[in-house]
Amino acid sequence: MKVVMYVHGGSENHGCEAIIRSTARLLDLDSKQSVLLSYNQSEDLHYGLDSVVSINQEINAINKKSFDFIKAYFMQKFFNKHYYVDALLHKLSINSINNMDFGLFVGGDNYCYSDAEVYPVVNKLIRKKVKKLVLWGTSVEPSVLEKRSIKKDIKKFDLIVARESISYEALKKVNSHTLLLPDPAFFLNIERTELPKNFIKGKTIGINISPMILEYEKNQGKTIENYEYLINYIIEQTDYNIALIPHVVWDSNDDRKVLRMLYDKISRKDRICIVDDHNCMQQKYIISQCSYFIGARTHATIAAYSTCVPTLVVGYSVKAKGIAKDLFGTYENYVIPVQELKEQSDLLNSFLWLRKNSARIKNELKNKTKEYAALKNEYLKGLVND
Image (spheres, one colour):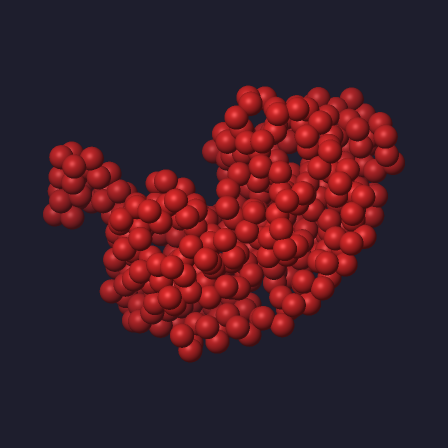
């Protein structure tokens, strides 16, 4: 089976890395027959992703003397459609592949944002190179589907695999060839690694925050204030330590910058640590050793859920709500939207609820992960039989 995966941001986003590793495992991909088109090949090589798939650079320079560029520039100049020029960044790499059985659009949340209009143009290019085009492990903000160009593009996918039910219900109305299956990263392997100083196994609470959620807060400064208030409560009122765990380390969107800001605000340095960067399997191991997890990054929380760690999500979009709803039957109490942080104790109150209900939550996660494990073969079946 010859598969090309594309619209992969790079492994410094360990969620992107987790999707590729898990997909390769679920579909039993041959690394020599399968190709990953990556926005940043060097990142993927650094984290060893070439052990599971061949990697080509997806984003390349545009030939500004080409007829393609002249046409795209015309669309930008006179119709304000910049995405035609953006799509040309992908064209060289797409032209380098031929006669693939499946093309998997692996940017799980790329249709959650308002700037998704480049993807119909990219998908048109790749359809010429594959027998079957699949939107893979996706979440889609329902409002994005109201855009005519996006809706038209979604209809053309031969198969859509939605990772949570809110997106599934919206996508099914547009494209009947839609399946509901958990995010592939629920099946990510764990790789043991050394735990950092001040990380006490079974007595540490994992904390993740991303710069992205700060952009969505309605009350400026409330997110950091809530995290700081929560950490101080844990240190002063419990015997748990705190581990600050990054999951995306891109220069432009680096969790460590915000985590360092939090670390500097906490006086009891003997009770807190910042976890170093690791590959996604090692980060999952570290998260699995936490007693509780409070996280903003989707795949950091999936690492926690899939290892039965009671988890509170500080969310901002449909994907957090949908994943929690499918696990617990509701996202209420399990997801606190960053937009709703008003008082400094909001996050703490949600954590206290999580702690009070932790035994039940662990049991529900154990049962759900067993259910999900039974679905492993459905990914390949869906791909081949749809």
